[in-house]
Amino acid sequence: MRTPVIAIFDVGKTNKKLFLFNEQYKIVFERSARFTETVDEDGDPCENLESLRLSVFDSLHEVFRKPEFEVRAINFAAYGASLVYLDENGKPLTPLYNYLKPYPEELQRKFYETYSGEETFAYTTASPVLGSLNSGMQLYRIKYENPALFERIHYALHLPQYLSFLVSGRMYSDMTSIGCHTNLWDFTKNDYHEWVRHEGIISKLAPLAPADEVFPASFPGNGYGVGVGLHDSSSALIPYLVSFHEPFVLISTGTWCISLNPFNHTPLTKAELDADCLCYMQYKGAPVKASRLFAGYEHEQQVKRISEHFGQSSSKYRSIPYNKNIVAKLRAETMHPKPIGGKVSAFAQRQLSAFASYEEAYHRLIMDLVDLQRISTQLIVTGSQVKRIFVDGGFSKNTIYMNLLAEAFPEMEVFAASMAQATAVGAALAIHGAWNNRPLPNDLIELRFYAHTSEKEGAG
Image (tube, rainbow, N blue to C red):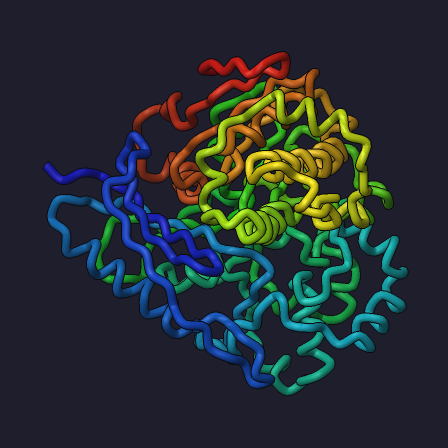
């Protein structure tokens, strides 16, 4: 008996993964690949698009050769802010430019001067001013720097939709990609921003398809559907939206710690935008208010500093238990440098010689990071009825972080959520009805409750 499965490609900046999930959403096969970056015409690093394309086909060939699986559907989740420019035959016209590619200042200034100024524009599009990370700005740049190339573009597809096109042969845009700090979407009108039509960008954007839309495959093999693909941050939220109906905030932790609140429908304020808040779009088209903190990156840098100072391995922190006495002692000390600009914790300014041990320094680092996390998450909690916080990713396994976060939000129930491959599972759930006749499982996410009154932990 062949096992019915869905194949999900989860394409991150570093790791590219393929998963097969059975009807209970358990992983029954996986493979991962990493590609060497290449460079664009300016010598800036970028994704190797051809390696990625070949890898999709190679992986699918491999899966279709496995007699134990019956592939019923395929979907994709990939990082955002990256566009693939296709000619009318579906061939890429340029490299896949990196969203960190520096943006010409003059052109950026011209854009915002033409379209109501940075502040108003950012408010309307829920997009902080981020240069190339606002993917619509990449199209604007091509129009003015390389008009001949702009003419040849049939459609610009975000990366998840390009991957979907490779297998379905159809070009579509998706709301989770279009709605994520792209400068393209006017959240006040729930439509493309006027500049998209004014500059002729609209003709370069493929028609919008709903996130649960499924197309027949153009790829050999038959009887399976192909999803339109999702932006990875929006995809990772889907298992939570499906599993929990009481309002919640999800803090997704990794290099960035992104707080996502799908239950906050108040418009972004100028202060929130200045504090790096933005809106994502969830798979059913509603805005998700989000705030970002570069805390995972800072944690990594400061752990190196602590480890060098105390002559310890940099993985030592993983085995340190939460110690409320150390926390009480550190709180009693009056030394309080301020965080830097609300973005970098106070720890960077602390002298390591002030700490008696690695454990003490590490507790202080997490205290400082949680101080910032409280401010960042509070920005998107205000104005909503949220009573629960779920933390997933790296910090959810850190008992010091989790205990301090529970203390920082005493009025909330705080849970460490563990779920293998939330992004990939989300992309599978988005098209559940197209491949899976069983009801949605109710055990997708494991929760561990952290009480704020003491060290006590229990299952939630």
